[in-house]
Length: 123
Image (cartoon, rainbow, N blue to C red; front, top):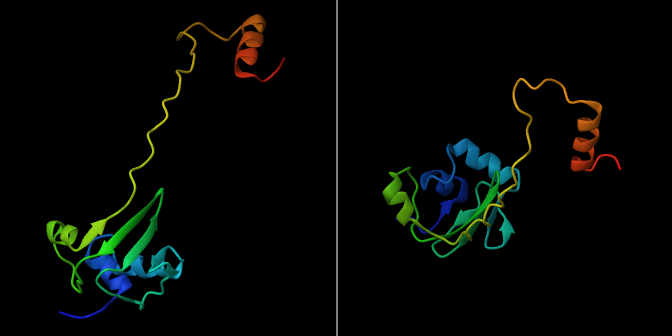
């Protein structure tokens, strides 16, 4: 078993990136941090290192528990790291938007003013 592995190869092997080239691109774009510093694709990762990967819409924070060079199945990959990603914030429910009945035609001038006042467009 190796003592260290390239960070792009490890991200691909533990299935945090779809492809090895996607992991390399994420490193080059500055979306991967190892031990608190930006990681280049060839930067070595060791057991116990904290790896932060910024994904669209979220950030994953994992601690390396096992070094993998080749891609493995999802159950084995899940055991290779400890996920320390905080839970996402609760979703804020939005109020319902008032809608006109189908087939009621265009709003009258009076209804248009009421809608504008409701939407806060005009005084």
